[in-house]
Length: 189
Image (tube, rainbow, N blue to C red; front, side, top):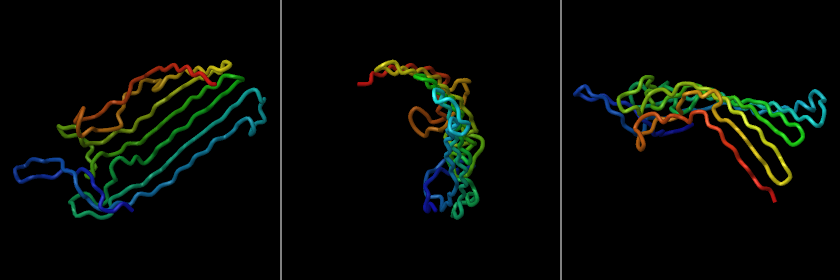
């Protein structure tokens, strides 16, 4: 239970205008399940010990609703910034001193205000955050006292966003990074 939740709402005025206001909108109920599993496929399939193979999944399913509100049109709506589905899954493959990982992420759509507005207003502060999915890949190599890692985040160059800013640098959507590549060199002593 989340009582006296503070959130954005759209409030209509007598002159016909609609303004965003932040304040107490009501009481919410949030519940869900999370599953985290990491399968060691070497043990499962009795693979060669030189080769390491793991499969992992982290999945959550969350229901969130306003159950009581003095504001019109809020009761029964979904709570903002709570995606229903959050999935991260992938494989890790290792061979001697090399380890690589491929990870897939899926986040379902979510709302940014208590009125569950789908379309944005002129400010860009409210509106739906659409579902998105991302693929990341990385490879790590151990060489004596050095660890070298090369990775690509957002491998498929997916265009998405995870937030709508109310202030600097906004207001409006904050786009997430495009495909980016990183190289890390670590000295272990």
